[in-house]
Amino acid sequence: MKTLLRMKTSLQESVQNMLNEQMTMEAHSSAVYLGMSSWCHEQGLIKTGEYFKKQSAEEREHMLRIFDYMIDMGGRAISPTVSDVQNDFTDLKSLLELYLEMEIKITESFNKMTGACIKVNDFQTVKFFEWFLNEQIEEEDNARRTLEIYELIGTELDGLFKIDHQIGELAGA
Ligand code: OFO
Image (tube, rainbow, N blue to C red; front, side, top):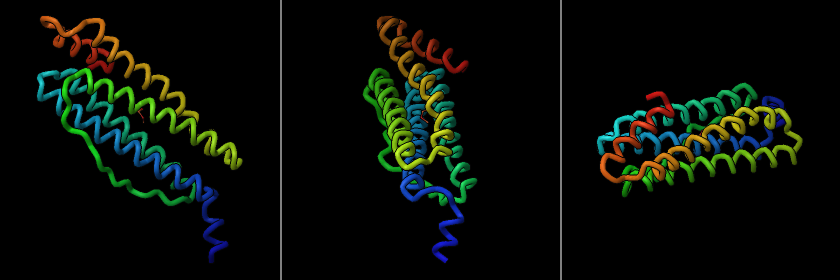
């Protein structure tokens, strides 16, 4: 029976565990970005609120992309438990800093997992990660851009209003 189960999936246990952890990370990002969206809306930063709602949906899509891959490989995907979801933020700047920090962590995670899969000769998963590695270039760039916009415009006078509109432009919101 054990042999049969092993044949059922070509995913190695270590890789399956990493993929499940990554699903949790994506689900966590989705939940935090939704919290960011709500906070922005509450502050009247409607465009930025919509931007983060879209980001939240994208992170869920990323989670499901991993879920589908695991299913296709005959693996066992675990529906993630998400905790430590921040809903309150001191100001827009600290929110945007957290956003960039989270995206950098996701990139680091994919780099680390890719390295680990190469070590165990799982080249199918390495190939699967390619899409995410490319996606992270754009994701990090967007996150950096939001902070640049914040710094460039500043919060004097109607600065926050202008920042809100410019961030909205990034997602066509
Ligand atoms: Fe899925 O981490 Fe952002 O994009």
